[in-house]
Length: 452
Image 1: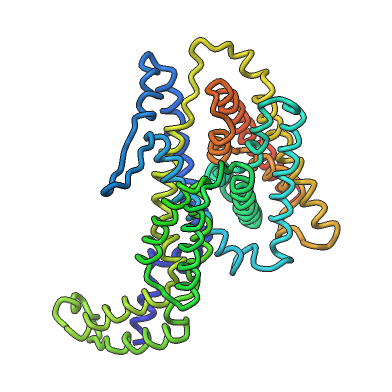
Image 2: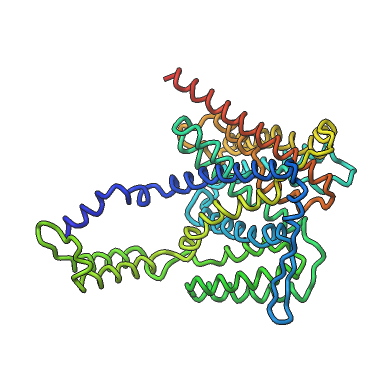
């Protein structure tokens, strides 16, 4: 059996999954940014092509879902923004819960650095926007420059490879996740329509059922999926933004399995002992030996029982969100048409300037200052090998708002002209922030190399 286990551990293809879970998460987020970039480019080309009128006409196509006397009619864009983005926020909620339980947000000491950075990266950019739009109707967009697009930010960081410390990648991921939580709270508190009490009561009842089920160790994933769909419908009718339902239900997804790790190891060790093979190996015994097949199936059941519903759902949904939901959102929302628009007036509008300066200057300034405050007060420490110039560079990458900024701008403005101004600011700021972040981090790497 010992020889079998050695051969199992020597298989190179399983090693990354066993010892580098963050590396896998980082690579997935980084590679998804390429798909996101392509979707954005397609949206911009489509909106500015000779057939550009079809861009908005297509995404405004109504789609109705009916069940008996109940029916919901939304445009394709609304189904994406209200429906698919709820799945995105659900995955964000799972990431937040995992970080709070065992990750970079699991203790006050560890959480202070990324949470402080996220707080600074929200307050200062909002202040920049506030200065440029004070007293006007465009004040509604104050939250647009508060958000960071984790996929794009990590994608840009991935370009630098080993030129940046591993601790900086973890820091950027952690403060982006904390930033997402702040954005969700802002959406829930400040971008809620009139409340429909009956639907709100139904939402509370569904949340209570989910909480009780989690308390009594119900681990059936299908149950939580059905409850999530019901909660989404209830939120949609209540006036609360339906995507917030994703975050709420994620908080109640169980983070413990049926087995603990000790029992899992005990059972797997027992079933591995069923493999008695000749010196030349087992070969294709799984097809011939019923005992071997039963042992494999029992190990599979044990793997299912030790894995938590939180991990299982995050593992299954994360690729769909990264490679389908977010690119679809960008395709449906990033189409800024410049036909018949004075670009100079668009760029110099208070909305565009507020978004650009908020993301390009406010983000790195707020992130760096609040990180400095956290460290100097002794509440936290910088990650290993991370220097202050690294924090500034990461703060610049935090200015890549994109997905969340576009999402909040859609909630802020109903006027198409104001939406175009916000989109222009988001796109320009994201490009500038990405280029500046890469440049600063690359120069820091060169300086560190010379010092060595």
